[in-house]
Amino acid sequence: MQIELYEACKSHATIVFLRLGNGKQFITVMLVKFFAPKALAVEGTQTQAPAPSSSIPRSTETRKVFFLTNSVNSIRLYASVFRSHTDFRVHEYYFEDSDLGALVV
Image (cartoon, rainbow, N blue to C red; front, side):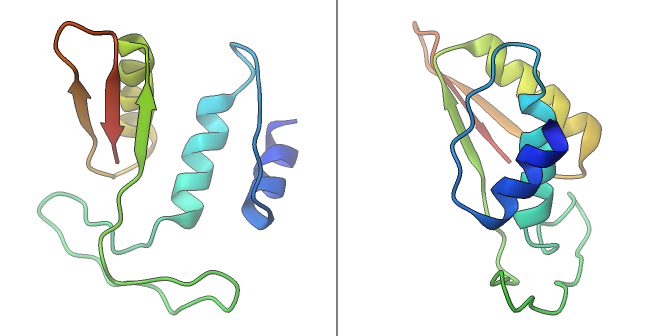
């Protein structure tokens, strides 16, 4: 089911609702890796952007992905998943006196 959802999300604007433990992190990481330009620099290195695809515009500019949540635990989980499965720089932000958090990839 995860691969089918991933493939659908690659080609259409899609909202996916999955319950706990159904692979949201896998789908999210795969989609970010698919859509993120190769120019997203690994800290301390520079990579060259790939040739532009006809279907998806690419840029040599660094792009950011934001995750906002009302659960600090979700931010920590997604940060861990992105650090484990990508070379992207990951920054976690927490709002003081709140359960709100943000993740920037």
